[in-house]
Image (tube, rainbow, N blue to C red):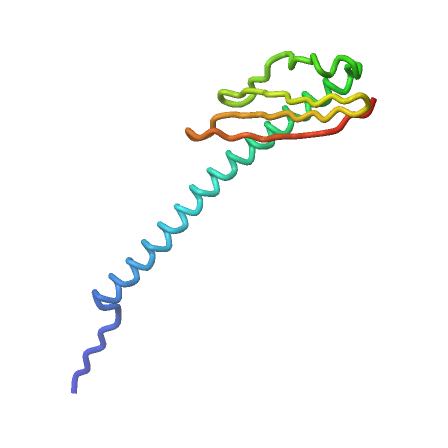
Length: 120
């Protein structure tokens, strides 16, 4: 009696294995691309935080009476289409200052606001 000793995979088993592999690789690539987008976004947010802190540090060196007329110089341009808006509310003994950094990222407008209080 002769036995057929064929060993190996059937065509269906190979096709199922290839389909599963394609799904796993596609999911991994999509996740990788999303993580790359998040990394770029995180870098831009870090730059915005540093710019806002820079403006507040510059403001820290000005006299209290000059806070209401302080202008951001030099203009910041570390991010695409970056704009800096300084909002101040100066009272007799307390000033509230907010720095709003806005920029364009992937076609969308993003912003970061940093606020502080300054005593006379």
